[in-house]
Length: 86
Image 1 (cartoon, rainbow, N blue to C red):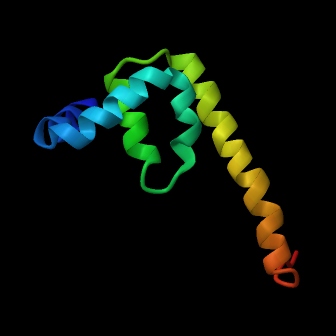
Image 2: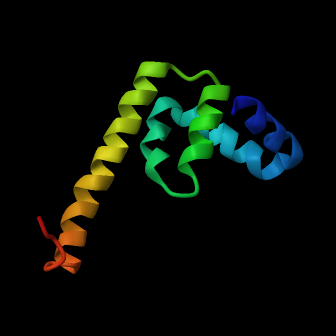
């Protein structure tokens, strides 16, 4: 995945260069955004390509995903109250 990230960055330099600088600036804390639908997987691939510290990145990814489901679950239960069946 890191090789693919390198190939994409090589194709579109201005946009991806800004994103790369942003990711380097925030470091593993940027992994809080790994839960986003279109951004999360490429973000993780680029983090691996940059060889960000593994465990801090995992912790921030876990926090982001936990917050996602902690927000989505009550929201969906509120929107679809009678749909839950056991």
